[in-house]
Length: 205
Ligand code: GRF
Image (cartoon, rainbow, N blue to C red; front, side, top):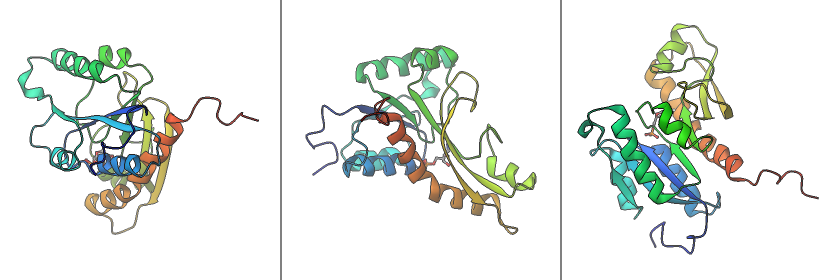
């Protein structure tokens, strides 16, 4: 049975945005299929038609869409198309899982508090690109990943969950990146569990 063909249509929907490999998206898809999250994937959207992750999503029978950013004259027009596609899906959470586009403040504000991103550093350290290289060059003892709520300022929104890994003396950006990625998948699932739980679920008597 494909992952979407369960009786899950009443569950909260996730829209997962990717640009490449899609390993985080796959981990989330597996967690949904295993009923760990109480959510379903409504759509996987890629801004790159050739993203490997799209092939994996299609193979799982997930609903996919491509919104190729190169077809739009401006960031605003791309974000408008993205917004329109998202609006038809009405996801509870928009999950940026290796989505390599900076979103405009206009889009972020339209989905205020509903966009989650995974960033491969211990935020607020090393926002932006090349995080593993920068962690090594800075002599950091630890690296890691953060899942945070997206706000208009890049990689600056409230952190929901983090995972730490040691930086080893012989680490290269590649080895460190792999060690962090190995922890990212569970981190994303843990963060989604927090975000999907009812606000007062810890206060129930
Ligand atoms: C991950 O390292 C994530 O932290 C970063 O982009 C990478 C995406 O990997 N934002 P994948 O496409 O999920 O495999």
